[in-house]
Length: 145
Image (cartoon, rainbow, N blue to C red; front, side, top):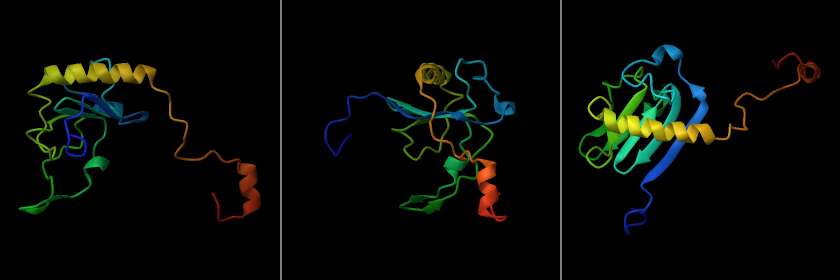
């Protein structure tokens, strides 16, 4: 829904895809390890009522969600080694119940969509660690590595 009006006609939204941000290959396990899309890559997609997350989601689960009846909710059940998560946003808007095991058909369909996006994605142009000429650093002093 956009501003309380009719639901959006857009049924599919690519929320994020960063092929440079991958979990260790040792985490590529489970029923989706042989899909074309590498599940260790950080990605998120919404299709209809479903939201799929792949890759390392631990940093994305470090926020505290306020529940009007119970205050801040800590998700002590969160398994940060799990590389695929599927949520039903209608029945579980807080994204607490992973349905990836129960709805593998939906997961495979969404992973195929992510694979298509990954094949045409433009690599990110920004680097998190800037390239620096070491010779320039020498003139700046000993406090800079």
